[in-house]
Length: 84
Ligand SMILES: [Zn+2]
Image 1 (cartoon, rainbow, N blue to C red):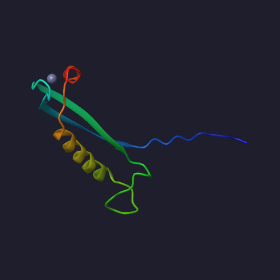
Image 2: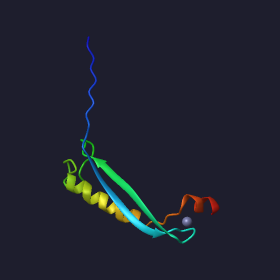
Image 3: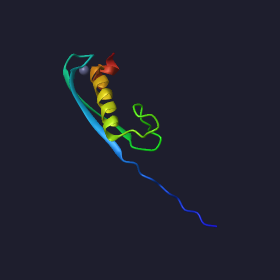
Image 4: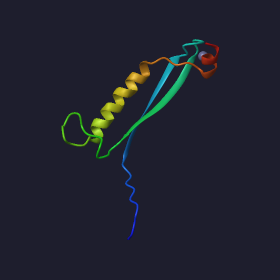
């Protein structure tokens, strides 16, 4: 009997968002960045083309939406969070 392991690596689609916002605690400007990603894998099915896999473009569009949502959220410095 023989065994072998098989690891498949899926391509990751990444997108980084940047924002400069005022800290919710002290009001000073702060820069933030966050990376969002999804992989092109057999379980990541398309919401547009039913039964098909998500395309790179579809993932990018979803990541853009996620970044826009993230940009609208407030943020605080770690020290300001402790004071709050
Ligand atoms: Zn602050």
